[in-house]
Length: 164
Image (cartoon, rainbow, N blue to C red; front, side, top):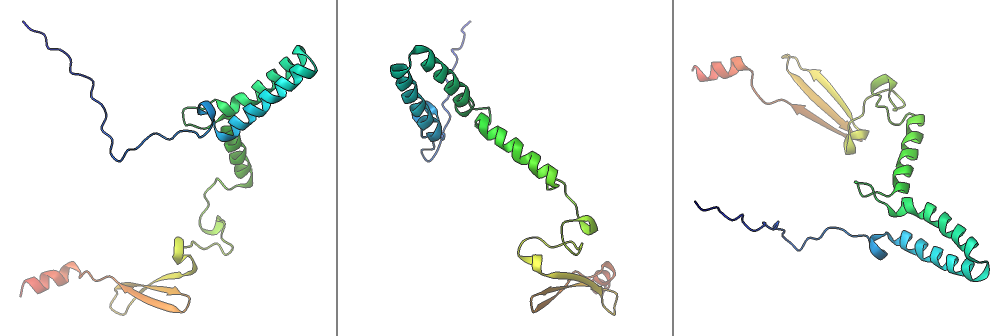
């Protein structure tokens, strides 16, 4: 009996020289965090030279407590301050009522009408029935009027044409 050797680990194939994004600062920190760590280090050295070890230790402790949420990333790649800011903005939007979807008469539009999305928001869409009972649509947009008619025949008409 022979045992097969496990194959060498397969390397994931990537195309286009793609690399995972990295932060531009020192030791994987962001640029702002790198600058603030440098400033904090300079302040700690100045405090150590002028006021002594205890003052420098206090400044070091405060700077570590302030900079740790900026340096540590969550699983989504956001820092602690980014997550905190997102929560604050969401709470502000929830208090203003911007997180609840309201449509129709209770919605945010001044006249209570439902608007079409995008570039058609300034247009009116009407549906009507002609003399033969067929539905058609009328699109009115700033001086332009477009009529849209459904072109598929009814089932009875298709049978009549094929039975001839």
